[in-house]
Image (cartoon, rainbow, N blue to C red):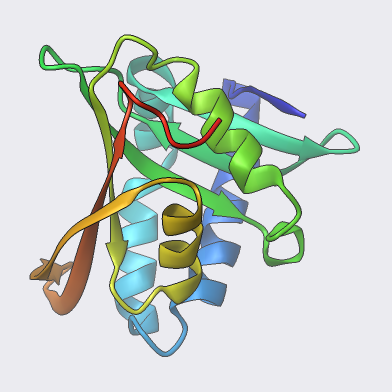
Length: 164
C-alpha cells in the first residue's frame, strides 16, 4: 500500500534511507560521506520540513514501512524533482518502486517534467528509471559533500507519460 507520509513515519524513513544508501552506495561513496549526507538530509528537522513542503509517500507491507518516495511540488514552469525513492533491499524488485512512482505522478498531473539525479554508478537506480520511462539527459561531474562523483540526469515527460 502507498500512503502519504506523516510525522509518525520519520524514524522509519530515516531507517530506510540509511539501509538503502549503505546497500546501494557501498564501494561507490565512502561511508563517512554517506553518513554526513544522511545526517543532514534526514535529520528530524529536515524531515519535518520535507513533510510540510514536499510530497512524501510511504510504501507499506503488512502495515510496516518498507520504502518511500519524496517529490518536490510543481514549480511555476510545471517542473518537479524526484528527490528520493528508496526501498529496503529485500523489497526491491517487488513492485513497490513502481507503485511509489505512480502515486507520486498523480500529484503532478498538471506538470511538464519530472527530473531525477542518480549517481552514475548506481546501476539499479538507472535501470529502474529507464524501465519506467525516464529519458537520460546528461552525465556530469559533481561534488557531493566535497567528494567528486559522476551524476546522471533523467527526465520524465509528464505531458506524454510513458508509464503509469
